[in-house]
Amino acid sequence: MKYKLIGKVKEPHGLKGDLYVLVFSHDTSWADNLSKIQLKSPQGEALDCDVTSHKPYKDGLLLKVKQVSDRNTSEKVKGYQVLIPEDLLVSKKGETIYLNEILGFQVFLKDQCVGMVDSFTSNGPQDILVVRNEEHQFEVPFVKEFILKLDFENKHLIMDFPEDLIDLGKE
Image (cartoon, rainbow, N blue to C red; front, side):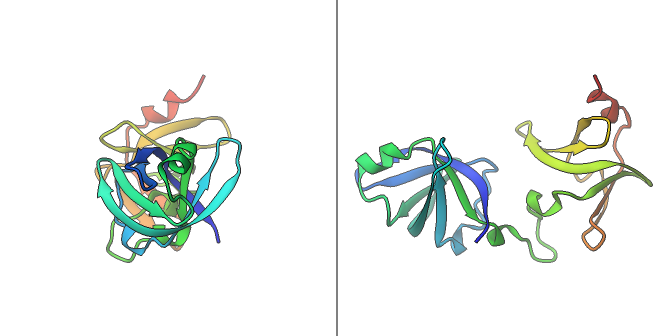
């Protein structure tokens, strides 16, 4: 099973081992189908966990997993990365997409290919695409005003954004 990073264990919650998971995107719409997660330590060790309950909390979720049964154990996994099965992050037609669905898409400024979606970041109010081409990388706000067409079949993202954004990444 492939997993995707969605957040981190911010802190323990309560005495029974509940975990407060900070979800980076603050979107937990996938949580109702959540049955498994993976916790990854800073050293890269992975622990597969069975989710027994969850509920929205602050900027994420409170999770109860079978493998963490008390406060002491939940203290030990504080700061661990939280990954979920990537198939939970696939939108249905007409739904808002998950950013990982456009990873690797070619980005076009109108009709000229200017690079490929390499990764993502955020400035708080909006998601930012990190676009890489042969020369450098640059960032483009992923906002509806800039999106002309999203072509999943050909993996093309056709946009209309200020051309100066391309030059901001050059040294």
